[in-house]
Length: 213
Image (cartoon, rainbow, N blue to C red; front, side, top):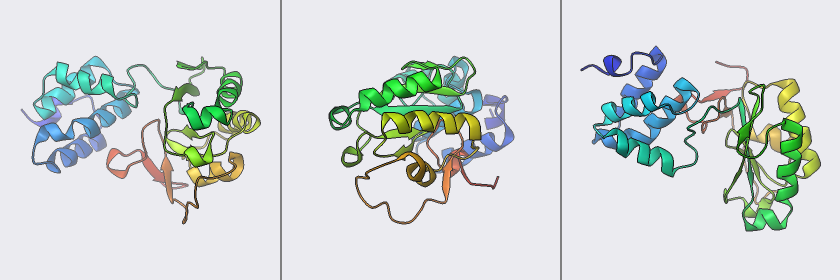
């Protein structure tokens, strides 16, 4: 059975990305995690059919694929808004006021923790440590990092995302506009950002340069 026959409802670019990902691993089953991201991008979230297709591509059982998808919280089983806002509430961020940041984001986005706004613009979630303890409270938008966020800046971030509706979410731009103390000097600016609530990575088609396709 050809790859296109297994995933006929995927776009041609994503079919080609899937082929390249499968070719990159000696064992097809090793591609399960990147393929799950592709399936999520294709359907807006991980559907049962999408996970079954990944199982067929990798030679795993649907139960094995579902076990992976349900273990890692970055795989979403329900529809996610255009901008996924993740507020770290682990101990360092909590002590620096992340609960207040989360509340501010919930109020401004019209989405409670674990839900998506009615207009589909925002999904909000609290997350465990994202490795930016020195820049607490830390927030991510589509997994692009912002450090030192205050409740006021959290609200301003939501307003900006709603009004400016950036196609590409750039961590350096958001840090400059809405961030504070950083955990360390980030160095050179990132040229690419996220275009979907999936980590920005070229092989997934989820990363772009601002102003470019």
